[in-house]
Image (cartoon, rainbow, N blue to C red; front, side, top):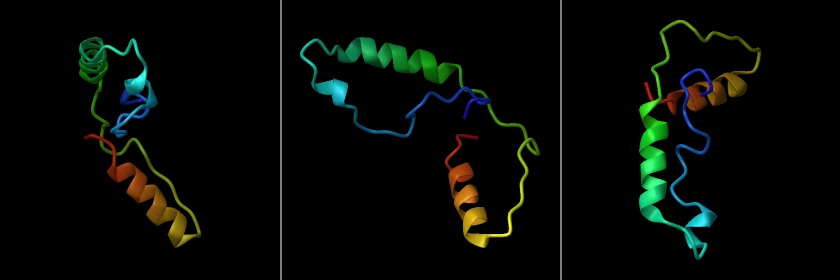
Length: 69
């Protein structure tokens, strides 16, 4: 996620700060669009790995499938 410049909590739908009295949705949306515009694709072959545990491999594959490619 760091390499691709994907913002932290990108996949999260709700945040606690939405309920703060001074929360401004238009400012949030502008900030979100700006951060999302900096996302870059992950080149093929840049990530590799191995493990003895098939469970661990499956978890890693699931996590990687969430990257916005």
